[in-house]
Amino acid sequence: MPERFTETFIKGLQPPAKGARWEWDSELTGFICRVFARTKTHPEGARTFYLSYWLKGERRYRIGSWPDWSVTAAREEAKAIRKRVDRGEDPATVRRELRDAPTMQDLWERYRTEHLPRKVPKSQSSDITMIERDILPHLGKDRRVCEVHHGDIVALHRAITDNGHPVLANRVIACASKMFSLALKPLQGEAKAWRDPALGNPCWGVEFNQEDGRERFLSTVVRRSATRLRPAEQRQRPIASASSC
Image 1 (cartoon, one colour):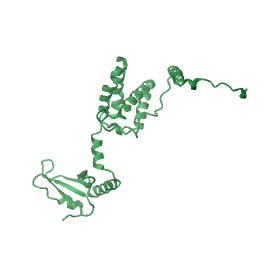
Image 2 (cartoon, rainbow, N blue to C red):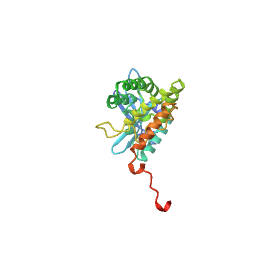
Image 3 (cartoon, one colour):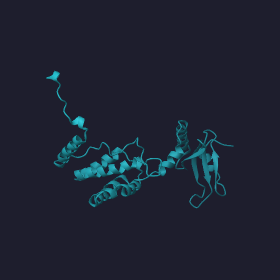
Image 4 (cartoon, rainbow, N blue to C red):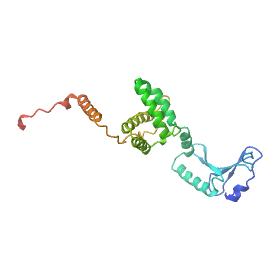
């Protein structure tokens, strides 16, 4: 018969001779504990809390191991997960997708394959240096692409600026922005983008450092280019009518 989980009950569970078995809490539906056989690492047998729920089949969400997770803490976590399930979420699948989500190192490899070959050798060398010296060390090679946020990029820009390289800071963020633009599109053969388009590019909105001289020149070029690209009818000045004279 199931019993209500308490510290005494969990501690007193006898491990099976081999493998593992499940114990069910009598109070909270789906709150379970898996008890493992004795090992050298766990001579009394390891115990791990889960929440079992039904969503197009049974799912089991791993909460954590006892005693790192007390019974009370694990029960509260199970209740929180149950609420997510009641809202139609699938926490176990979300966790699995997050665990397997592409990292910044994966994004760098994608950038190296998809975008870098389009650039001239000098620009390729510059990008490689910025990515391997600034972007990956600051954001973390193993960090998931979907977890990087705008504040991380602002901090990266500020760190390089404070180190006395304001122009380089702008170049690094421009390079990072191109990397994240790739992440907003699915890789060929994949159904989902590496980063939810709703999150956007975390580099958008970063305030670049002033670049005197060159910036004014580039602004003029961009302005003139935009004028040339406008449709002819928008560039023509309206002819004054007789009534307006």
